[in-house]
Image 1 (cartoon, rainbow, N blue to C red):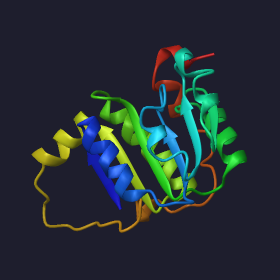
Image 2 (tube, one colour):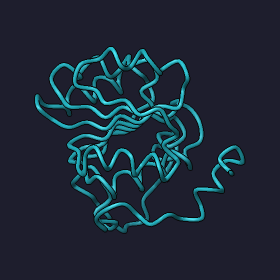
Image 3 (cartoon, helix red, strand yellow):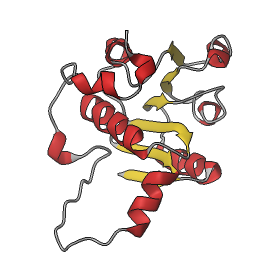
Image 4 (cartoon, rainbow, N blue to C red):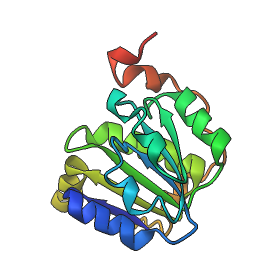
Length: 171
């Protein structure tokens, strides 16, 4: 199942409903762990954020392996994959409000790599797009936490598009 929300309380409630004791959770955009604290004591968590404020703070959580890095970077994906090859829940909150294209790309790459049972995404742009859309009669329905039509296994090959997401990522 893929749950999409914008309100932080709704997003956190969605995660509380999706996460079970013992699950492996990958959290993209953990910042200072406000959401992480809801499930870290009962789960194994790989939490990732590129915020300098998260460094040190995230080390205080039990059952959390923190990666300081940009989730749009291939090497960050590879580092997470070394820690876990699959997850039960993928949580994505990359600022919540903007850049739905980036959030969707991150979702696609991370979910096709880790094959979560459930995904929770917090992004206003994606929610607005979904709520403003009318389906043309074609039905594509994924019953898992990733898009079934993109079920390749393992880390996707390094794609040139990684360099295009933002100029600050160019070496």
